[in-house]
Image (cartoon, rainbow over all chains, first blue to last red; front, side, top):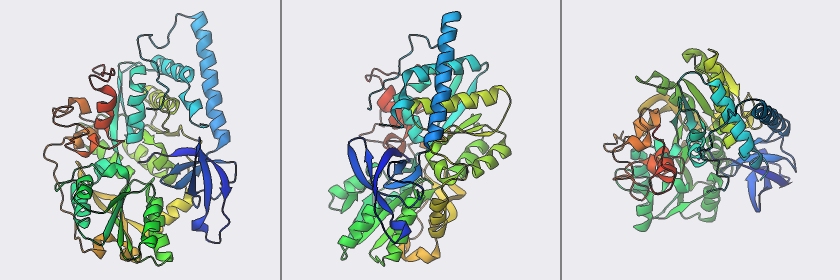
Length: 102
Length: 370
């Protein structure tokens, strides 16, 4: 229910009513009309998180990048440790992450 | 898709899991609040990547699960009125009230329609001026701005044949209730990322300080969840209790101000019944008097929904985290998604449904007994 999916804003309708600010948003291969009233800073090309037909927030690309960089450093650190130390990682008997949507 | 795939990267997930394993020195119990997080944890096997002393228990953040049976009965009763079109999110249809569910009401001739957005229900009302369109407005803070917008647009557009049957609940009071419950096991929270994207973190700071408990705002992809878990465990291991934001790409500290403004314009805070938990004070939203014309309870004179006690379903204990779904005596036996005893077995966010789908014998994904 609180599911929200990231999609890219393709177009924004011009409208006089701020609560009717609608746009077309693309999710992979699907396009939908989304109410953008709650993401007034979202522009064409931006990604927004969409819940029940409403953009909840514009996704902040800088914050997203920062998270990914921290993760990359952690991965690199772990690779180094795996080389220099006894492996400390996840035991092989544990299931790996299935990455296909179910 | 961008902003999803990079957070499902197995190498990053395993690096985070290894870091969690290195960090944990004592047993800890964390609760993820949102049912969407519960499903992701079980679907991706996140719980199995964690050291055995680190336990995840599953919170009440499933709006369908906490919608009271009495309100479902009222929705079912409305479908018997020939003028009514009852619109609902699809998740709600198979959830049993005491007098049946909406799917059976539809089979019995009621006009029940699944919509994706409350605005779809409003558009239907505009297309069908001779009918009464009632939208079953359930949800947490995440959904409240959407439901508020539907009421507001109905008022602005003078759409008089549209109303809301409201079951809006608030996540903060539920977290508070869990921490006050006797026998609560929760030592740290992974707060619901999308609800917090709307509310901001102010309320979480209040909870954190009152209960001295770490709260980490967490997203929904495997890497987001592991990052939230790592941050929470680091706080616990170092004796800190702070609010952290591990979902900064979506959550601003102040929340979504226009969404909050519309929510407060249309709704006011009231006491609400939570299915399985009872009536919690100041735990939900009801339409303000200005919007009374769009309140289905008033339009159809439904009166207060009688408080229910769910005799057979132990969903309340599941949502408090004191009972794991597969420890329930009815799990997978008398209670299955096709014939559920209670809502947590039905909803796509219900903890019991997640265990049934991802941890049942025969799915090749049996739990490890933790």
